[in-house]
Image (cartoon, rainbow, N blue to C red):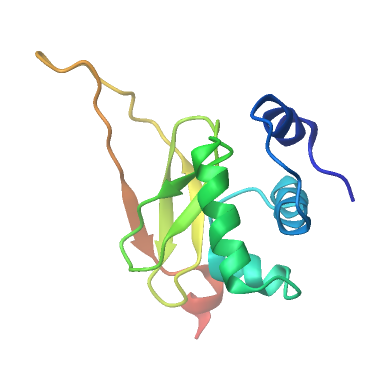
Length: 131
């Protein structure tokens, strides 16, 4: 498996060394769009220790490859940087998170140059709703 070109370009531009953990996480990101946690990365890449995963995710945030996503429960989640504007829905049963399209457009407020917001919807996923 190879690193997605756009991530390889960032590594090259930032003169970032491609270590085995960085390569593994980058390849996984190329095949796993959407919201994810470090726990999900560890499950998908069990050969990597948790410290390497945390450090790699922190580096990827600093390189603008991924960005943190604020969800309503305690575990930190991330998603690939550069996605279209959207919001998230979180299952209150299993805490699975998904992206949903956003109909709300960013508005300008008098006296503010930038407004950041986070909207998270909650509900039950199809699996949890059946139980």
